[in-house]
Image (cartoon, rainbow, N blue to C red; front, side, top):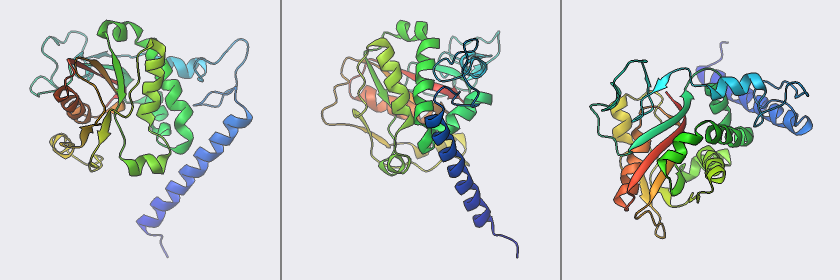
Length: 258
């Protein structure tokens, strides 16, 4: 009897959880191993923010030029004064965007691991790497407040943490800027975007965020932090809400741009 598709997917999910649990136990037993490839630290090859030199280099180096407006990959001679082909014709609420790199290779692998319960340390180290590699851009942005994109309560409970919050904590700490993780709240769960068109993403996220009663965005320059930007819809909607609450400037910061 052939297994059903649901059974195969369920087995795959269980195997993935077991692999993440095994990796988490290995990190407890051998803390001086790379968070991604498990290679051991040595005097000649020290870890950098939890990653071996090879993995750190693949995470930290952006091989392409990003659009300063939406962080999409652009060609070396592309005119981005008014944005790029991905954002030029679209109204975006944030004023600029920063990324660590494109959503591919080692960076994609690292981000996918942050979405499991054992990935909290990876999210923190990716945030530390982002702060170090984009130090000039972040200083030039003149940010007053760092705020992560919130998860819906059900997804946060299931995962145990919000990876965007862990990234934001490291960025805020590196620059001595206040982190306000509860100023922006998710008021509805948007449908998952895996099979959605770009236009559907923008429509689905509308009205997903609100501002907490005691939040004080008025007159602030805000850094909105998330792990991945597929189209910019989520960060733009969050920026729209934050600006409606009085923020003067919003910069989007992501580990990767899809």
